[in-house]
Length: 229
Image (tube, rainbow, N blue to C red; front, side):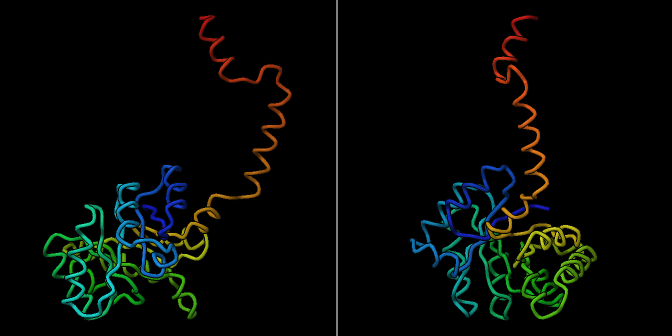
């Protein structure tokens, strides 16, 4: 499973990108607005940094408007993926944009039937919202599994399952186990997924033991060893 980060904050993206695990980025109008910067410039900078899929969302609510905006967004950078909502107009826009070779992320998916329609419309990604499904006492991971099974049984569909609305590290694990192709996480969740108190304790103990070694400079030790050969 690939990992995306769900943010429009360049500092957060740079940090996670430095870990060597980041495959792409998802944004939405709310995340862009939070940054208070030029929308187009932010999307371009993210694409240049990540060099992978970056979802940028249309705001039009009719098919013609979505297609027009999608074509324009695709001109920003070769890595832009146009994001459209899973409504009738969104499906129409998805099929038209996909036919033109523009990758589309169909978002706000909450049931398998929606995912099937998006796949048939040629979506590059479908974004089921795990957290919001859990909020209404359904099982978001079950939704991921059902969509993955539907796509696996339909060879003509090449849509990737992009698990979204991940609220905590366990959602990340559930998405991976359920068969998601991609998971997109907020910066906070990725940081939480990396942390564990036993890891910190173990690392501190190793360092404390290392302090008892007379010569601790690795570069000096390696250089001395190389010279002695």
